[in-house]
Image (cartoon, rainbow, N blue to C red; front, side, top):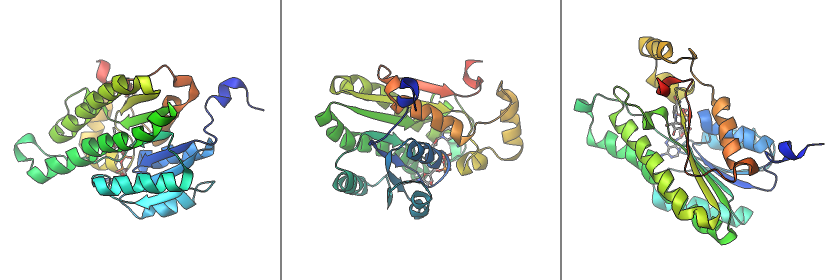
Length: 252
Ligand SMILES: NC(=O)c1ccc[n+]([C@@H]2O[C@H](COP(=O)([O-])OP(=O)(O)OC[C@H]3O[C@@H](n4cnc5c(N)ncnc54)[C@H](O)[C@@H]3O)[C@@H](O)[C@H]2O)c1
């Protein structure tokens, strides 16, 4: 039998929409939420999202779509509501890291970064908050990055998008607090996913690890646990926060 503390982390009956759920951190969040009893709406650019959903316990909705396309976002939200009747939790996790020296960044890299990392979380939040506000309850978590609070070489578009995402989180938190919707951000250091391994390969990664006080990168499951806390009953008072999970990197 679960005690009240453990019960506070259960998501039975909750509907959670997670973007970028086919791989990396999003897949780890999906696995943890499914284990806690949630019904998932898993969005990803990759068709692999269908197999990722089938691999989980329970019956979940997988939608292959581009979150940077507002029509596709709205269609996905409509399908979720048609299947489950509501959305209780939104995790804006899909993101891209197109890295270049500031002098070399091209318009398309800048626009794609902003479209996926900043525009998509905003318009998905807007679409889902309309549903949450009617119920007077909802949880939104945005995957930002340590790049939202510190400068990183070759990350000018990425850092700008993640700092913007944290700022957006703060504004939504104050505007929607009265509707019972909490909005928080999580800012990890390097996480060992496809995105993290590509950005921090070789000597760049080894040098970065030496600068992180705990001496290692994070695992996707360590980020998923914090997301679960933020959407749980235990975090009802928490909104507008940027939870930094970085092994001590940014406090130096
Ligand atoms: N890995 C890291 O080091 C790290 C560190 C800090 C923050 N983050 C952030 O965490 C989030 C997840 O990163 P990850 O490391 O798991 O990345 P990942 O590349 O391993 O997985 C991201 C997933 O998002 C999907 N995706 C990308 N663009 C999309 C789009 N336009 N529409 C729908 N889906 C799309 C990809 O197909 C992929 O399945 C991102 O927002 C990233 O910026 C990652």
